[in-house]
Length: 214
Image 1 (tube, rainbow, N blue to C red):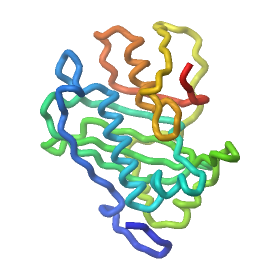
Image 2: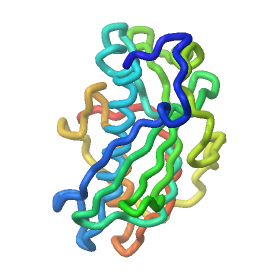
Image 3: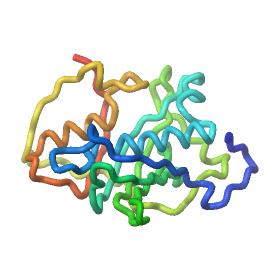
Image 4: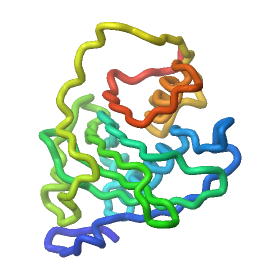
């Protein structure tokens, strides 16, 4: 469905739902889903709804535009287990200057919320190498103002101390359709940098200039 100006959607229609089952290749040694796998699910749900609403990759790339993830804030109540079925709920939740906001909720089969997240995205002009205002949201009725996780995305504090550090080499397999390292890869690298006994329950991310091979 391409949502046109004047089209009225109720609150439920503004939410996109997508179900997944946790596979063997998506879990860690504990049998819990990798955080990277969960974020891939979120990314897939977001991409599908964007396409459904008429501002997905195929629509925008013809105009020289792409979506770039800028910031992420996640809160994890629990990680789903191998074989468990989960449902992703996502919706456009507004705009903040040049940033488009998108929220997520992950539920288990009982309907309990196991993860919530909010994110901000930039509509990027590839040729001009600068962001464009998200007029897409201003002139449509797809925005659901309810937030899964309240965050105005204030600048993160300057890092004064490094507790864990590790270097990674960018490889071709890390690149996505935008020819940059995919956001989920950065998150996996961050997890690889901390001891395995640490199980993350929350995450704040701010993406800086993109990375390329070599």
